[in-house]
Amino acid sequence: MILARYIGSVCRLCRREGEKLYLKASRCETPKCAIEKRAYPPGQHGQGRIKVSEYGIQLREKQKARRIYGVLEKQFRKYFKIAERKKGVTGENLLQLLEMRFDSVVYRLGFAGSRSAARQMVRHRFFTINGKRVDVPSYIMKKGDVIAPVSKKMETFPIKTALEKMAGKTLPQWLTFDMDKKEGTVQSPASREDVALPIQEQLIVELYSR
Image (cartoon, rainbow, N blue to C red; front, side):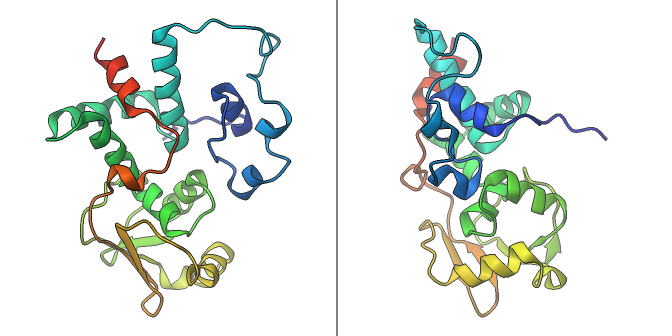
């Protein structure tokens, strides 16, 4: 099965959105970050003055959210429809669904430096959910779900390094990690306050409401 995915430079995505999306882990915090070097869109017209319409602003916000979470257009639209049907504020429901993805929770727990790295680890069956191996990055976690590294993966570089750093890591309020059992638990659904990302979800709602 061939999966549609972006295989170009992720730094170009940050430059296209005009801000750091933190797609390359620790590199984004260094002077090597593409935004630090060239804070303008890629391409020959990147440094020109471009007038952006209201639709363009809404579209860029949707693209930014898609790129942060590594979600394709069809899947993103599916999440939006689910968010619309749920009780509460549609934009907040959308961000909650994206945060509760398996790969995003693995990233939030600190097992990976970026969501793309977390996605790769999930696909390679590094983790279990409630004792069962799951290799679907888009699996939506629920309250009470327990994530743990597969025992034979404990000594691999990414897991071993992550566990060494776990003790001093500050987790979102909706997640906990037991160092003795080497497992993380979803205490509750993610709230909007826990999503510290540069996303204006209302613009996405307005885009899809056109």
